[in-house]
Image 1 (cartoon, helix red, strand yellow):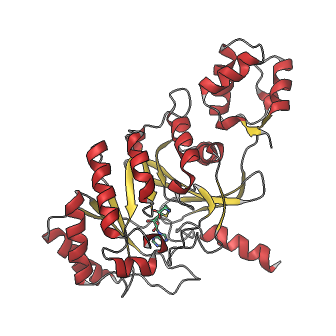
Image 2 (cartoon, helix red, strand yellow):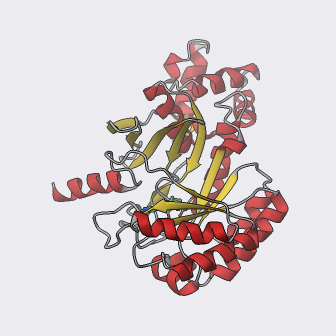
Length: 346
Ligand code: SAH
């Protein structure tokens, strides 16, 4: 299969074009067109016809198609379901916060991590997204909505560290000054804790925020809801977090989805506080989004307050994620699941 030209960095484009006998400045022209969302070589009017022809022979180029778009009446959150070149679909969510417009993007089609409460993993992993496909989630969400995007969270479908090289390349592309120029400090990567990748990530010395989906502070509970805990364990996860923090100086945040009767006891709270303090992590509590295929229910609000009090009394920095887009299948993976079910039933 031909390579998607959008996945190439400017230096690589330069090499490609000079090897085709073109002057170097052509690379900049191509990269800037791609950065504006041009997805048709013929629309690159600043290139000679012969070059457009050569590029068409060598490279894939295409725009993702909007399969479904839902706009929340409650808070303006927009949820996109994109169709990719090969017919697969992924979701992107645009949230309008006071500190800027944030997109939540998918990093894989499906997921193999098997978290018991998550909709994205139900059909397993299909494939990782290409760097271009992740970039296009951000770029085409901005172009379609007309809302300038300043922040990115890799918290959609998929496990970013299970698609490591493509995600690293995507970060470079989206951060590039001649591209979307989104600062690394405005990007958060969320992982279920694939600790064997943490050191490699730390070595990249990016200024991104690493967010760890902890969801339980002890092995018994965590292994029950997150298969990724098997063979790794919470102690090893904490060691990896500590090393990451020491090497990068970037504070880690723990995500903790509150699941009724599963991970929300006072004992869980006390151990969570201890874990968070031991690595200087910030705790972000998430009211569980109920997923149709899953048996779990969110913790009640009153109970959540008691849980928060224990953490705060222990000196832990806690925030509760505001739930946006409640009327548009807010939790990622749900829209894609709906389509899969519809295709299956048809
Ligand atoms: N694979 C990565 C990123 C994708 S999930 C990870 O595990 O971090 C983004 C966040 O949403 C994770 O913290 C995940 O555990 C959480 N999540 C998944 N299903 C959820 C649900 N039904 N309700 C609340 N949070 C959920």
